Image (tube, rainbow, N blue to C red; front, side, top):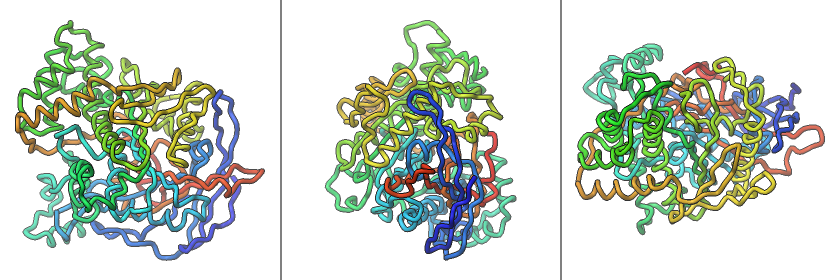
Length: 574
């Protein structure tokens, strides 16, 4: 490690270090590269609980050493990973001025302001900012394109395994009221909103977290009239209308890349269905009757609410159940995985991509990742890429990064997986620089065509092939975007039950951000920090100006990260 000179900004001097990492080229040959990392850079003052963040005042800063990732070196980009308030501290809302909510989104937005002002000091280009999010983090990335205050701050978005929409007619992710029992559990049920907030601010963080641990509570963004002026479903679908109120939204101006894994629904086998169906997730012996009587009805209720026509449930069962075959365990397992891949991820991504491709000024791309990672937490029968597998490949397989996985799984990537990681990084890095991932890195690779709503073109990515294809996950996508939508209209059923986001426990690493009460930004990468669907981290990737910080000794990358708060000191097992 070699210490860097301090970088001067209006907020004070910031020091970092030169680190080395072993990366792999397109043929699997290793090489040692160097990058610069800066950690623990505050972008806002420590927040007052349940209030929006305040800008950071000038003060000196110093970054301690922390493991960096191959993403910044192979991709030749500046990578910014931000820390922000999560869970109740980030999204509690009473729907009033006393607690308007969305504090976590405002934390992220202040980090975007920090990038616009100071990233040039670290070799970044504030006119080439790409916002990257995984799962719930991807929905946050889309929310940022709907906030007028982000005009000019975001230029591209990479939304992986998530968006702000659900299948047509599904209940929104946003909440306009708190869940029943939250205040009672904490002991802050009061007559007025002001008294409630006074009570909550008087509780210790330990008391709040202990109370929340007793039951499963979910906190999500809300329509606050400022950051989210209305439901994102309404805001995005209304973009097709001649409405001047939508002109300032960045959603149609940014370049958009959407991505998912071909077995996203495999996570639900371990997280939701194994115990409910009285089996184990490695065996997962599910029958056609189980799918018809348990799986499909619950899936429909989660997505559309309880007041839904039985005809829709029966139609979904007909589409996904093996109504003519035998109880083939592998075939039926796959049907369950397909159902949740489509209903939770694929169909919402297609709806988002359709609007953007039809109306947007920016480019639109879609990929499906099909390379299995074979971590021990995945069901042994799962043959494709599970949730967040592509994120592992995107963050690369540096020795430092692997230590966060190896101690849990003993996983070691193959040469072919390292090569695929390099290719994926280069694709997304090119997109971050230009809005176009082409040309693809390997010799003989085809062009990645832009997505369009008619042919639904996408790129299928695995170690064996990188292939453009058409008609993404058909006929299932037409079923969700057209058939179900028309059935909902025909039956005139309005779902009223709230959406339930199950606590996802099946992933290898979880960064516990729920108790973060300080706000920091640092210049580096934390490997595998975007793995949990309900514990999100939004990664802000900023394309580097190629003329800056290039010399004969180092391939120097600059990166912002997250540290300083106790909750970020290290990953914990899910």
